[in-house]
View (cartoon, helix red, strand yellow):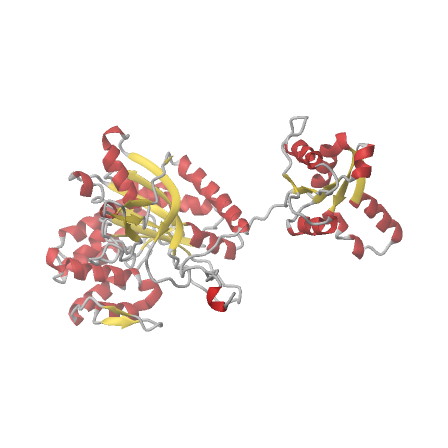
Amino acid sequence: MTNKDEPVRPEARLPKGFSDISAGEIRATETMLGTIRQVFESYGFEPLDTPAIEFSDALGKFLPDQDRPNEGVFSFKDDDDQWLSLRYDLTAPLARYVAANYQNLPKPFRRYQAGPVWRNEKPGPGRFRQFTQFDADTVGASSVAADAELCMLAADTLDALGVERGQYVIKVNNRKVLDGVLEAIGLGGEANAAKRLKVLRAIDKFDRLGIEGVSALFGKGRKDESGDYTKGADLTPAQSKEVLNYLGGKFAVMGAGEGASGWNASFSAWKSIVGESESGQDGIEELIQMARLLWETGYRYEQISFDSSVVRGLEYYTGPVFEAELTAPIKDERGQPIRLGSVVSGGRYDGLVERFTGEKVPATGISIGVSRLLFGLQLLGKYKDSTPQGPVVVLVFQDQPIANYQKLVYRLRHPDDGGPPIRAEMYLGSGKIGAQTKYADKRGSPCVVIQGGDEKAKGQVQIKDLILGATLTSIKDRDEYLKKQAEAQFAVPESDLVEAVRGVLSRHKA
């Protein structure tokens, strides 16, 4: 066969922005999700699942506002020549579900959902094209009490995950306030919608780019470190100055010792900036109501603050918006400080269901970035990759009937005494006993079960404790060595297999 005749083999590689997930990370994630689920359930939210693929028009154009359907999302056409897209979040599919089932749903409708989402965007450190979100939403409640409750939910969830007070902050703002600022500088109305969206997305990058980067995006544009250029909003210097003044008004309304009376002085600064804008004044009043509800319920300044830079990058938000950050110092493996950005985010989106029904349906929700939050918790020492002991491995002699070993495995998995099953597997490869033992070591097995022809004739099995056996070489005292050696490998009647294996597992607290 010539080189030209050889088959072309694909390269074993991943697309940019995607990653494989190890068993340890999966187990750590499931442990974390279990805690989050308990908190969400305690608030009365019910689970829901929706498909990963939706009609593109059902998802809407809330990511980068371009003409082609797959800008910002992964899209393709089906056999009927209709555009389909992988969901870019869990909120747009929820709106479609509520619109389709509204008459039969309890109102308000409270649901939570966890699942992967996809963004066809430029990947980078901490930015993946596929990631998991865990959402909670209340649909059909117009009261800001629903928004305040989601801030409480975010705080309670981080508390339950072991993040201490002072190690996180939930920052709250209101899109109506920024709308008021933009109206005050002449950017109201439908004609300025595209420019307002660019301003929103620039402000959403404030914590990452700082004042200089955002200023550039308010003007002509900005080139990032890779050389990619982002066109700016083309604000005039005067317009840019007013918005930057608003951003400079960041504050925590729950200052130590201020109590409820301390909020009014803080919010008055925003009131002066939005001027006569009805939208802006309404937004500030909603924030004042939220602040009072939070304070009266017991949430304090070290948990929740109000911050003018919080706008959220998606276009569909219409009212209060919020995001949570881990504020504890976080360092990477090289000891370099890193900033994760928001690990929980959300807000009010009263127009999403209306797109389908033509009727206004109020809604608000939060979304947890599962991978980012887990990464942050791991760096804080809260959650580690969970790698339990491997299964007990039953070794196989090639000259013995395979059914004998299958019976041993079955007995471990289905104990006669009704006790809990023991995680076990029969070796299914073709290696010799030495190679099988090495396999068990790689699997993290606490012990192996051995039954050759001699043991079978005696009605026995050998139990080899791999964990204890690994320590024998470090024992210098001969008597102690012989004692441990006898404990590390011993024979028992086949009828005592389960009890003997349980003894080894108990020895190592498996």
